[in-house]
Amino acid sequence: MTTNTSTQAAEPIDAQTVYTVLICDLVGLRLGPDGKPDPSEVRAHIEAKGGRFHAAALGDKARLERGRVHFFYQPDLSNREELIEAAGDGRYDAVIAAATFLPAETVFPLAGVRIGAGTGNMGSRSWGGGGEGGTAVLMNTPGINSRATAQMVMKAILKVLPDLPVDLLHDRVARGAFDTGRELRDFPTEKLEGKTIAIIGYGNIGREVAKLARAFGMRVVIHARPRHRDWIEAEGFTYAADLVDAAEGADVLSVHVGLGKQDAQTGRYANAGLIGSGVLLRMNRGAVLVNYDRGELVDVAALGDALDAGQVRHAAIDADLFSDVSTGRLSGPMLPYLDLVERHGARLELLPHAAADTDHPSRVAGAKQAVDQIFDVICRKSVTNAKGTVPPGYLSLGATTPPGIGPVTADHLLKLTAGECSELADVCDRQSRLWKALSDAPPAERGAIVGEQGEELVRLIDRFCLLADKLNLRGPYQ
Image 1: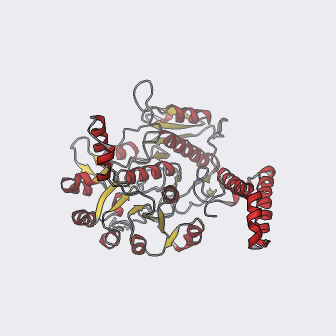
Image 2 (image 1 turned 90 degrees about the vertical axis):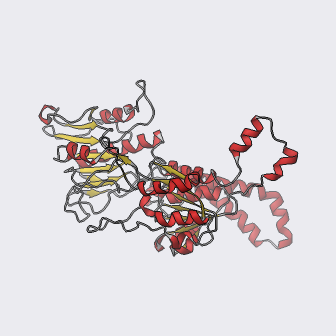
Image 3 (image 1 turned 180 degrees about the horizontal axis):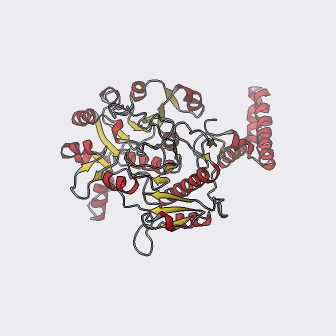
């Protein structure tokens, strides 16, 4: 299922109604002519759908054009007080956010969309279905930045594995101070091939990391819910039912599970501290930890002990860090990791939740999808990628992800053209006849068949794999 990102006709809106939407994060990361991040692609998308784009805060709602959805672009809103002042009275019907944390006191009567996976930063009590008493629809755009995040995970791993000191060698070569014949032997290098990566979670990002790791020749172990086991193994990965078992003998551990449900009394998330000493000690000595999901997932004290002992050689963490404009006070899930910098600075890589958010095309695609989802809620009372229970009166259209991301669905199969089905059938039929010939032939005669038909068989195998990828037919079925 896909959203209407190519819609050019104006959406049907009640001619007497004004709808207002707050956009409180950047919707374009590439710099425009003015040297600032450029939102023009998303602005054009909004206007093509009949909406209005305002690079300002909402003022007098009575002065706005009726029969329109008005989007107010305020990407500089940051701290709690600013957001409550801007949206604490329900003046905005809906909100689109990416990394900005929305306090519980913010109010959005109709809907909210988080650009990206998860909704941990969407803290408003407006959302229905979560037990907070709200009635607004909460959605996200899963898969939009999955590949960007997975590629950054691999970049973090490749900084330390293979362990070739690239900067040192570059410096010596640039100075003409290296002799390959005599000195290269002093720099033996580990490689990724044959090493084990434990991936915690089999969502869109976890699966993309698994695919990339396999391309590097790594052994991939995945810990996820039991319902995923068959598909994990069908894709050629190893399933681990227990988190600690997944970490056993791992050279790299990458976390992709989300925070889980928040306890209403304590505020603690179900998966907080999930990666603790029991997990870290089961990995191979000198292992690499990557947490490009949520900072709270790792027990920071346990990580510090593991770094002290050399159990973990390198940790790459991507988590929110906020700074109060007036006081300079820092907050956010990255804050505890800063205590490790003095002792382990060179063995840490700390990013401000930037792994997925530095990719301009992904952010624009996610923002356009979020705009479509807001229009769908307003115009048709239909919901895509709902988080939690869909409130009464709304129709859930299920989930959608970009092509090739996430599970294969019935919709993928139903959208195949007759020509595509025919080509797949022909490739499978020709393969089947060749495999049958090999199966039926006595061992002494197989050499002749392979000599005549081996190249054709391999071409057919490659063709089938290419078609399956092109038509988004690879992966778990949902």
